[in-house]
Length: 489
Image (cartoon, rainbow, N blue to C red):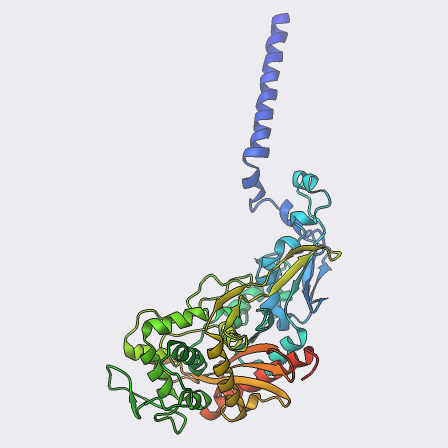
C-alpha cells in the first residue's frame, strides 16, 4: 500500500513539474510570439481602453477621442481632419497609424516608459500609462492659408522657417478626413477601399511623398553652382549664350518662352527664366559640379526624416551633356518634393545653410511634463554666403520686376522663382505650376519663412498656368500669414 502511494506521489510530482515547465515555456519562451498573434485581442483591447493623447498645433489639440462603447472602446477623432491630414496621418483600429500618429504612437497611446508612474511594475503587468501629447511645428494660420489657396486643386505646399528648419505648413490637395478610418466597422473598410481607389489619390501626401519635375525653380540651384564654381563671376555680364541654343550632341533646339535671352546675363536669366542661358551654364559647370551642388541642397538623399520618411529627390549622377542641359533647367529625370524645394528657398534665405526639416517638436505627458524634444540640426552648407546674398537679390528682382510679381507683399521683402514643369508623353499634358519664395518683414534681421508651391492641374493658357499665375498667389497668402504671426510687416 505504501509503495503504491509513493508511486502515485511521484507521478503527481512529475505532472506538477511538467505543468510548471509548460507554464514557463508559454510565459517566457513563447510569450512574445503569443502576444503578437493576430488571435490575441488583449493587446488591442488594452490599447483602445483609454483615450489617446492629442496632436497639438499652436499648442491646441487637433485630435480627440470618442467613447464608442464597443470592445475596442475609444476611437480617434479629428478637428479639421482634411486640413491637418498630411501632418497627423490616421490612427485606425483596423489599418494602424501613419505620419505623426505613427511617429509618436508610443507617447500618444501611453506605452512610452516615461509615462508609467511605476515603470518596473508597468513592465511586469504590461499596463499602459495615460496617453501623452505630441506638439508639432505647424502654424494654424499658415496651414489654412495654404489649404484655402489650393482650393481643392491637385497640388501641395510646404513652408519652413529658414533659421531653424521648423516646418510651418505642410498641405496636400485633395485631402481626406482621417476620422473615416478610425473605428472598426464595415464603413471603415469601405472608406479605406474608396480612398485607395480614388484616381485623385487623396491619401497621398504630395508635399513629402510625391516628386515632380521642378522645372525652372531648379534654375536657382544651377545659378548657385555657376557662382560657386566661378563659371559666372559677374551676374550682370553677358553669358555668351547662342540663340538658337542646340542641346549638345544633338540637333534639338531648346526654346525660350521669355524674350531677350540671347547672350543674357545670369541676373536677367533668373529674372525672366531663360532656358537657354541656364542650360548652357549647367553644361559649363559640368556634371560633377552640378551633382555636387544638387546634393548639397538635399537631392539624392534617401535618409531624410521629419520624423517620417520623405521621398528622395533626384538629380542623375550619370548623364550625357544634352541630358545635363535639360536637368539644369529642372527637366529630364530631375524630380523634387515640394518640401525639398522649400529647403532650396530656405537655403537662399538662410545665407547658404540648410537646416534639417523639423515637424515633431516635442512630446509630453498628459500634464505637460517633457518626454522628448527634437533638436535643431544643420543639414549642410549648400553654397557660400556671398552666393546666397547674390541669389537673394536676384530672387527679389523676380518679384519686383519679373515673372513673380503676383507674390509681392507691400512693406515686406519677398524673393521668388517661378517654374513651369513639362510632363507627360511628348510634354502633352498641362504643365505643373511651381513657385518657390521667401519673405522678410520690414526691419527684421532674417527672413521669416520659405515656401514651395506646386499646382498639378492648372487648366488655363500657358502664361496663366506658370508659377507666377497659379502658384505665386498661394505662396503670397502663406507668407502673409507667416509675417502676421511674426508681429506684422
